[in-house]
Length: 165
Image 1: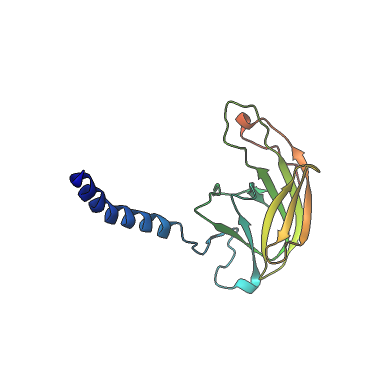
Image 2 (image 1 turned 135 degrees about the vertical axis):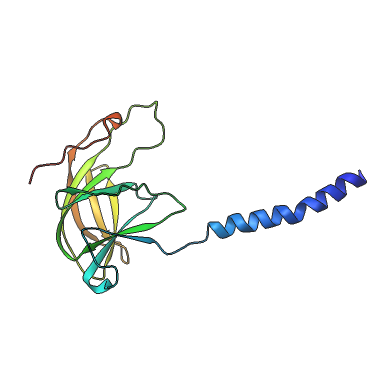
């Protein structure tokens, strides 16, 4: 029994170090910034930021009828903002399917026409009961714009049919 206590005490320090490193890795870091269409990262007053979060599983898939070159999927441990020039934009938004592949599911595709203000940060949210995508101000939660459902393909097709300009 004495040997067990010694081993248990010897294991405490590594366990505490491991737990501290794990918790430190989960600390909130500022979001990564991803410029879209050459938006300047050094002038926050001229750009708008569009945040994707795992809590609000809607994904930006295109801007102004152009698919994004980089496609990211939000996760609880990473946070990022797409940086767009302020002004009028068409946003292609896609729902993120839940993680149960054997269950047939559909992806919902939306288009939002919006005037983005410089220096503002926005969030995407889905109103599934109304089948609309919402664009909200990150600071107040106020709805700025919404967009209708334009397509609802099966998840295995992995693509949305976006409307032509």
